[in-house]
Image (cartoon, rainbow, N blue to C red; front, side, top):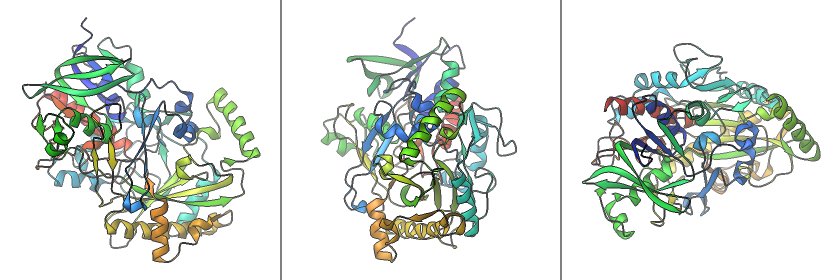
Length: 531
C-alpha cells in the first residue's frame, strides 16, 4: 500500500483534527492521514487532571508561544501556549465544558454563514457529547466526548458559588442549557478521574483502523497547489522532507496561529505580506491572519490560610504527595481537580442583552499563568471579557515552518473593552467581599489598592493576558475578507478546507474547546456530502 497517497490529509491532531480523523475514517473505503507536530499523548501529566499545573514547564507537549509587545498591556508580551501533542490543547487545557450562548451562533449566521445558527449546531453538540448527568433536549449521553461533574470539588468552590449567590447572581446547574447566566460548578471533560481529551474521545478508540494513519513529529511546511488545486502537503519528519498527496481534500486544523501561518507559507494570504516575505503568491486572500481575537482576562488573587487550597508549603507538598498516591491507585481524590472548578456568567452593565463576563474560580493562587511560584495558600478569580471588540493579526516572522509566527492580538486596543473589563472586575470584587468567602481570605494588596478608575485601568493593563481562546484568523463568511466559505472551503482553492477555531467569525461566549469539536463534527458531514 502506498504510504504517501491518501484520500484525506488532516494537518493538526488537535481537537478538530481528532474529530475529523475519526469521522472520515469511519468509511473503510477511504484512507486518512493525520499529521501532528508534537509527540503522542503519553505523559501522565496529561491524563492526571491536576497535571495541568505543570503544563507551563513541559514544552514537549505545550508550545510556549508569546505575542509581540502589546501597547494595551503596557508593552508586555502576552503568553500564548498551545497544546502540541495528540489532542492539541484539549490535552493541556482546564477541561471546562462550555458551548457559548445561543446568540453567538445566530450572530454567525447573520454574518453571512447559513447553517451555523444555534438550531443548526445544537445537533452537533449533542452528537459529540456523552454527559453523565444531563440528558434532555440540550444534552446527549451517547457521544464520544465524556462530560461529567467534578468528582471531588473543593470546599472553596462551593463557597465561591454561595458568595456569588449572596452577591445577587442566580445559581445555574447547567451553563449549556436554556440560559448561560448565573454561577455554579463547571462540568468537565473527564472520565473515571482522568482527563478525557479529544484524542481519548475520538482517536484512541480508532487507532487500529487500517485506513487511518497517525503521524507524530511531523511539521507541515506548505500546501502544494497544482493548477490552483490543493493536491499535496510538503512536510518534514525526522529531518527528512517528503510529500503526501491527497486524492480528495487537504484539511488544515492547526489552530488559530498555525493554520494561517501554513496558508501564508503556501502562498495563500495577503499579497503584500507574502511579497515582503519572498513567497510567490498563489491566491490573494487578504483575510488570512486577520481578525485575530481572544478573551482578555485578569486575575484577582486572595490569600487564605486554609490547607484545603492548593499552595506552596510543607503541608501543601505533603498533601500533593498523598494525592498522587491516591490518584495513581484509584483515579480519585483531590488531584482530579481541574483547578478552575467553579465560575459564572454575568452582564457588566444592566443594559446588555447577554452576559459579557465569565468567571473562573481557581482553588489556588494563580500568578503569571502558574509560571511564577507564590508561596502560601489562597484562591484566584479570573475575570474574562467574552465579546472583545479589539482585533489583531497573525503574520509570518520567517518562511521557516519551525519558527513561530508573529502574534498580535491587540489586547484592549478598543476603549470599550477596558470599560467592560473594569466593570467586570468591580463586580467580581463584590463576590469576593461576601461572607461566604471573605471570612477565609483577603484580596492581594497589589490589586486591592487599585480602586479609582485610573488605578484600576493601570492594574488591568499591568496584569491582563489571554485565557487561551484565540480564534478568527481564517474566518468563514462570504465577503472579501473571509478566508473560508460557510462550508469551510478555502475561497479560490479547490481541494482545501480549514476546520478549527480559526474559522470562527467571532469568539463564542465561553471556553472554545466544545465549539471547536462541534465545528469539526459539522465539517465531517460537509466533507462527506461533497464526495
